[in-house]
Amino acid sequence: MRPVALYKDPFMQGGYLVLCDTYRPNGDPTETNKRMCCVDAVDQICDMKPWFGIEQEYTFLGPDNRPYGWIPTSQPRPQGPYYCSVGANCSFAREIVESHYMACLFMDLNIFGTNAEVMPSQWEYQIGPSEGIECADEIWISRYVLHRIGEEYGITVSFDPKPMEGDWNGAGAHFNFSTEEMRKENGIQVMDKLIEKLKDKHLRHIAAYDPKGGEDNKRRLTGKHETANIKEFSSGVANRGVSVRIPRNVAEEKKGYLEDRRPAANMDPYSVMNVVIRTCFLDQ
Image (tube, rainbow, N blue to C red; front, side, top):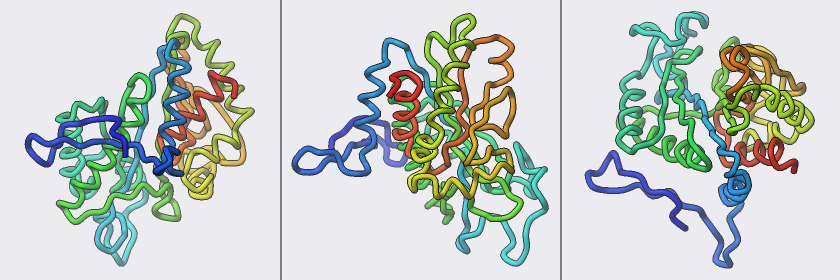
């Protein structure tokens, strides 16, 4: 193991959490070490001043392995009142969410916000915008901290892209990115070209956007429940049902960032960042 990032430990006073890369005795990276390749890609575009942000969705599960707060013998009311909700009949395990948020702040992570999601007991937090590899590192360590806090309450955290079948939203990890050129006046022209590149490499990205090469994510990317269909690439302004979204304010100001809505909640952030950089900026 080789240390790559150091964070204040929110659980033990005066301690630290250390994020490490993993290598074999001969120096080769292990199969799960996607960071090394990602760092190489990031280093090649550092002059572009890239910013990255990830919207990490997840689901709380109770001891029965069902979403926390769901009655074992029945389904909750249909989706609708849970998104950004308040109240004991709509919002579950907020104490864990806020404990996690405070822990991330203590660790000096670049956490931007949090909200209840569309399915009951599903939540989201956002890391970024951050420069370079930092955003992906902070997603990994923030996931670890979320699991640790869940232990204190006997609640499991699931990053499954579709934890409940039926008329329920899945869980994603929308990936936001920009370069200095995209953030300048008429940066929308650059974004239009990048969208075409992403369209051409759609299958390559789907394969990189969950650990099972798209098999997990196809349960989520059905064209329903605020997703695009996994088989087709699409883009649009302020549209939740597309592969890549141009936020409304970006379209109005003609500059800013793009949001790739395809990555699954259980994605490896290094894999996602790596493939986006190589497709969009390195033409690889």
